[in-house]
Structure formats: structure tokens, C-alpha cells
Image 1 (cartoon, helix red, strand yellow):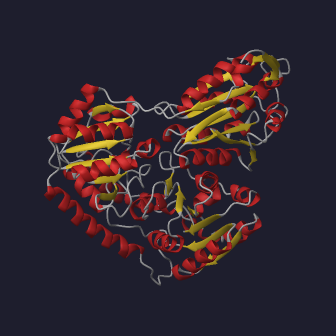
Image 2 (image 1 turned 90 degrees about the vertical axis):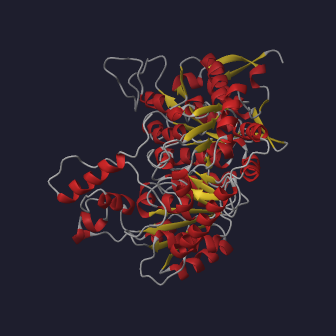
Image 3 (image 1 turned 135 degrees about the horizontal axis):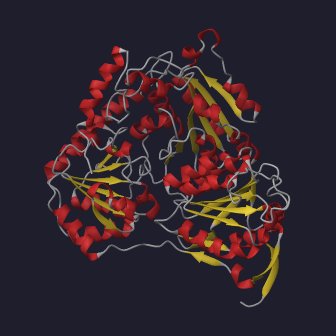
Amino acid sequence: MTGTIRLTMAQATARFLAAQMTEIEGERLPLFAGVWAIFGHGNVAGMGEALYGVREQLPTYRAHNEQGMAHAAIAFAKASFRRRMMACTTSIGPGATNMVTAAALAHVNRLPVLFLPGDVFANRRPDPVLQQVEDFSDGTVSANDCFKPVSRYFDRITRPEQIMPALRRAMQVLTDPAECGPVTLALCQDTQAEAYDYPISFFAETVHSQRRVRPDADELARAVAAMQSAKQPVVIAGGGVLYSGATEALARFAQSHNVPLMETQAGKSALPHSHPLNMGSVGVTGTSAANRLAEQADVVLAVGTRLADFTTGSWALFKNPEAEFVALNVAAVDAGKHGALPLLSDARVGLEALHEGLGAWRAPESWRHEAEAGKREWLGEADAVTAATNAPLPSDAQVIGATQRAMGEAIVVCAAGGLPGELHKLWKAESVGRYHLEYGYSTMGYEIAGGLGVKLARPGDEVVVMVGDGSYMMANSELSTAVMMGLRLTVVVLDNRGFGCINRLQMATGGENFNNLFEDVRKEAMPEIDFVAHAAAMGAHAQKAAGIAELEAALADARARGGVNVVVIDTDPLVTTEAGGHWWDVAVPEVSERAGVRAKRAEYEERVKGQRIG
């Protein structure tokens, strides 16, 4: 393909993105499902005109908040198991910096999203322009430099021809299994409108396939030997299992070799909840079945997980002093953590190679029997806390139970507060991808926008967002976006009148109830927020449920009605599921005038002695 075509830099960007493709189960699809855009003076003339020109091939979606639209884009990528993605464009200034939190979320969770914020004038003639951040000692600085530490790749485009190597590098990062994460291309607003004679070949359709890194022979041999020495092995399944499409290989591995499995927040739904070897969640928010085995394990096979503190119980969970870790991961930084034996590989390929290398080896039957007995005990505990009661203020667990009974095999979406811990333990995900939690960055305000993105990725599935009142108050405007787009989405708002999760943590570390619940802020002026009226004002069908029975009925009505539905229920801010769980390292003050804090500090000092070092 020879010759050139004269386009603006913005037009070249839009055409290039529209030409990127992927193949999923034999079907060729656009890699970019669309571009979220909130226009301003820094992008409306350049990117706005360019996106209009490709609107049939590359849809543009309008949101109400830049952080919200970026969350929706990231949720879309996560729900698509990183096989498809979206881009986000904003103006210079607050529109751009509003996306920095979302960029950090994507960076922590290793999720692909392309940020295209407007930037200052490259020619600097009109400086300082509206919304420009001036550094008095560095003329090259702009507000978009905030993206540098939270982007896998960052570039500032000051000449139109620079967009070609920048976009090619962006695609390498966005589609690489190890480097995957956010890319920021800051587009100087004058450069967006400048023309250049681009090679026509730059816009040729390109199909991106999933790269599968194969294990090194020596690393594989060491991993096989470690597993063969195990008497009490466990597998921890992380998000990499889902992104690799390794769920069948994982099930075959666990079943063939008699190895109990436990799931991280990102890895939950890797095996059906009902699978006899699935012990459920692990770590701080883990089940008693999983954590009991983790404490005894002599070999831990960590697949596709970065082994964060919630998974490892701040590295105090694994109590066997002889425990050895094998880290099967596509990213070298994760494969080498805490002295693990690294097995650098794609999750599916690595599990298949381990399975073959182990041959007929199986963990002892007594280990499996212990696991199955622990799971039966846990299921009884879980059923008890999720059962319907007539309590005037139900617990989060009871609301979760009611939501699952009413919504069936829905995809649950959540992010922050106390709900992720309860959902990690209690939500019964029977098929892949039915559990969508953003807990790597634990971003309050992700939930509703995230539900929007999940629904765009999985239009045929029921999607239910569970969100606390605190997180709802932080970011709710994309509820109106879902209404505007005609989507089917159900939102359950649990109102405990404040930041109940952090209030409980405050109490657990010896603190007084302070500045979290409304009643502890200004008792004489405790606000009565009408979430029903608020949601209805944004176009949703909204109603209040007086208890668990009304909640189930309201959710059943929502399923039948369609559209965007919001159901609000008051909940108890103090009750949490006591069964399961593990200590989490939250440092308690070493000096305090209060006896309660001093007592908690003494407990803390004992706990940290159990942490693994190195």
C-alpha cells in the first residue's frame, strides 16, 4: 500500500484507532469499541472533528464526568478480559486531570485504556492558555505530567508526524500481556489541527492476537519438582487466569492433581463456586475453608496474581515455615516476588506445561478430604449470614444474599468500602466473569460507571451494581449516561449513613467513632439524603425497600421492567461477617494517651511477628 494522504494529526489518530482489530473465538472485531469524549477547547476542534469523521466505524460516547467515563472504559476492558478496549479524550486542564485517578486504577489492575487528553500549545505563541498549569522553572511542564507515574507509556505529541511512532508504541503496550496498562498520549491542541502527509499504509487494518509466553525449561523443571514434593499444596488463582482464558486448564490441573484452589478478588469466578476444589476467597477477605488450608500449605502455586496484601493477609497468612511459593506469571516483576520460584509464562500455557510435567502425580487424598470438609463447614456459615431475617437494619451479607436470590446469574459490580470483602466471601459466581470487583485500587466512585462499562461489554447479561451510600455520593452521574444510552442496569444502594467500613476499621484499631458516620460528625444536623428522589431525577426508576423481603420483590420487578433501576435499602453500619477473614496490617499508633489505642498497639506488635520477610 503506497502513497500518502493529508490529514490532521487528530484525524490520523482516529483513523488509526478505527483500523485496529482483534479476533475472539474466530470473530474479527474492532479492538477499540469506541471513544468516550467530553469536549472542551483543548479537543473539540481537533479530536472532535476527527471523531465525527469516523463515527460509523469508531463510535463516540458522551459522559458526564471524565473520571466516570474513564472508569467505564476500564470496566469494559476488564469485562472483555483485556481482548477489547476503549479510548478517552478530554480537554486540557481539569478534564484531563479528572482522569488521573482512573489511570492509577488501570495501572494497578493492569488494564488497557488509551487516554488522549488535550495539552498546551506546542508553538507556545498564546501561552499561557486557558487552564494551562505553569511551572516557573520548567517551560516543558503541563498538567498532563500527572499521568506519567500512572501510565505504562506516556508521550506528548508536539508535531503531527510524532503520532505515528507514538501510536505504534501505544498498541504494543495496550496489547502486551505483561506491559498491559494505561497509555497516555497528550495531544497539544494546536498540533491536533496541523496537517501532515501520512503514509496510507499507516492506516491498514491490523489484527492483534493474544501473545502467549511459553515457560523456560529450567524454570518449569524447578516448578514441577517443587509441586511433586508437596503434601499440602494449594493454588491461588488471580486475574491473569481470566485474562489468559486459562479457566479450563486450571480446572483440569486442580482435578487431575487433587489440589485445592482459592481465588483473589481479580481471580474470583476462575472456577465455578460449586466446584468441590474451589475453596473460595483467600486472605483478609477469605473464607475459613481457604485460609485454613493456606495456613498449612507447604507449596503455594500462585497463578496470575501479584500477591497483594489482601491476598496474603499482609504476608502473615502462610504460617508453615517450610512453605515454598511458585509464581506462574506473565510479568517478571510478579513472578519474582517474595523469593518465589518464578515460572514466567502465560497462565494457560504454563498450567498445561505443569500438568504435563507432573504426569500422574496427585496430592494426598487426605488433603482433599480436609479441604472438602472445610468447604462444607464454610458453606453452612455463609448460608447463615446471607439468610433473610426481619432485622430492622439488615447486614450487607443479608442484602448480598437477597440480591443473588433475586438476580440469579447476574454479573455483580462493586469496588470499595465494606461490600468487596463481603462479596469476595459470599457471592456465588458459577460461570466465568460473573464477578467484577475493582479492588486493586479500591476506587470509591467506580461502581456505577463500572457497571455501565460492563454492560457495554456484556450486553446480553444481567448486570447488578452494589454500592454503598458513601461511594454513590462520590460519583453517580453516569447513572444518567446509562439512561441516556438506553441500557439495562440494576443498582442496589446500601445506605448505612456514612463510611461504615472505615468506621469499623477505626474501632478495630482502638479509635473513637470520629468523622465517618453522619451521626458522629454533626448529630444535630444529620442529613436525610433521598437517594430514591436523586436517582429518579436522573431518569432511573427508583424505589426504597423497607427490608429484605421488599428488596427481593423490588429486584424481581426491576428484572421484569428493564431499563435503569435503582433500589435503596437502609443497612446496619456496624455488622460484618465474622466467619472467615484474616488479619490485615494497618499500623496502630505507637504512642497514645488513650488506653484503647495502647491495647490495640500491643495486639498489633504481636501480629507483625507472624509476617514473612523477604
